[in-house]
Amino acid sequence: MSDALNYLIKTRPETVSHYFAFLKETGKYLDPKTRNLISVITKVHSQTDRGFRQYLGRALREGCSPMEVLDALLMAFPALGLAKIIWAVDIILDMNIPGFAPEALTQAAGADTAKSVAAVAAVAAPAPAEWRDVMAAKEVPDGEVMRTECQGRGIFIYRDKKTYQVYDSHCPHQSTDIPELAIKGTTLTCPKHQWQFDAKSGDCIKKGNSPLMHLEAKVAKGRLLAFW
Image 1: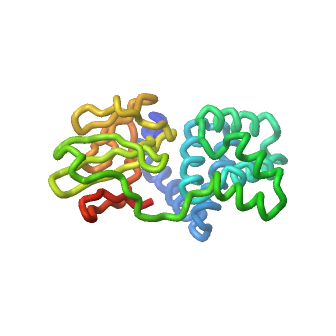
Image 2 (image 1 turned 120 degrees about the horizontal axis):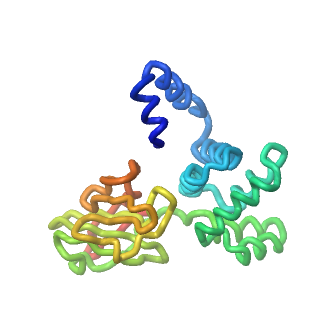
Image 3 (image 1 turned 120 degrees about the vertical axis):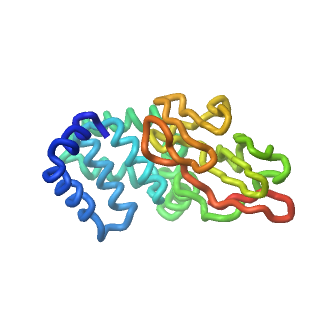
């Protein structure tokens, strides 16, 4: 939230509160994917870099495929114009999201309709959620944080005796992949804008206000499993 908006909230709460109430009510009958796609378009229209990255990440987490995101941008061409669409694509390329790789999308588009849909789903859409074998539970040091990779996904693990907390390694701010070097005690610091997170809870404790994405975890037959 900007300093200016914080100022208005403090000085004119009776006015600004109506605005936030309005925002809360709008879109409540839309499914999350559609609602976030619309938010993506509004951020492109206003050319709000931070907001665009935030809502693009939300749309992808809600199940939007890269092709659906590109479709939404192109369908909004009459309102956005080419310059703003190019602005948005430049940011997408800067974010280096694997599903938007040109070779993946063009290969899918070159197949017949049925194969194209299957290829895009396989490359861009999230795989069905399932329990995934991460590692031997005893390999996670008690009272410490570690980073590992599981089936192509970076994750952080915090262990407190028999309790394990597992988080996606991407910062919720702009989807920056937080590296192992970011670990200091039980604090994780995103290298891009220095958002800090408490690995015990996943909460953001400095700079930002969004927690890490928590993944359900359990131990079965000595193996640590995570669900996504």
